Amino acid sequence: MTDVLTLSHVTKSFGALKVTDDVSFAVAKGQALGIIGPNGAGKSTLFNLITGNFLPDGGTVTFLGRDVTRTPAMARVRMGVGRSFQIPQPFEGLTVFENLLTAGAYGRGLREAEVEADCIAILRDTGLLDRANQLAGSLSLLDRKRLELARAMATGPELLLLDEIAGGLTEGECQVLVATIRGLHAKGVTIIWIEHVLHALTSVVERLLVLDFGRVIGIGAPAEIMASKEVREIYLGMDV
Image (tube, rainbow, N blue to C red; front, top):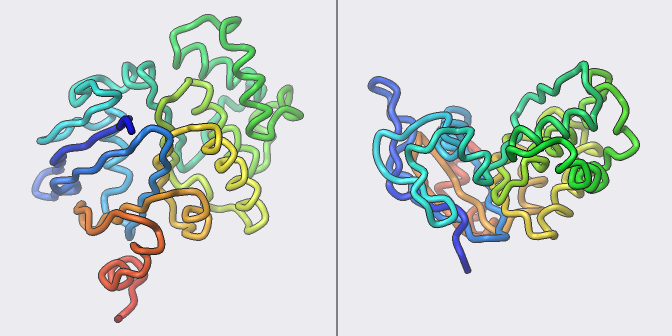
């Protein structure tokens, strides 16, 4: 199975604080990997290293077989790295469809007319087709999350990064969003998902990676990882 992304001995420090400490892992094509860890574990920094918003101090980042360790963020988007953000920030004065057209055209380096059909299909896949002509600024939180997901998909990603996309939703809303993500994954989308809502995460991903103080302390099947004494002590705060 071909690896879409490989990190090898990646490190990152801010001053004396090492936030990513010798991190190595790979994600195969079509796989979904979940990332968990306490606040301050280095999860968002890890995403920024994958997207090129941060450059590592050491180690290598390989995407689709190519060393992208020093490749700028926008170039990585056009290579196929798509990302949603924890706090949705759509273009509120544009419609839902216009938001997708903008993301698709700019993210893929194409004209809007060339991405229209894909954007319509993404609206359908993310449950937003009936909101296509609604201003993004008038959407509910659930639909803003869906739009954040749809905009990331509009860039044509080979790898989709989801950053706490279920945060702030009710249980019912979370179930709706998870069903959407599960549907995208079933179509072969490769996903790395940071999330604190564990039942949402484990209903989609095949593997879990646990970070603590920038170190990988475990990676494997969700049931195996959540049964680990070290993970339960560090992540769940339990004295096992």
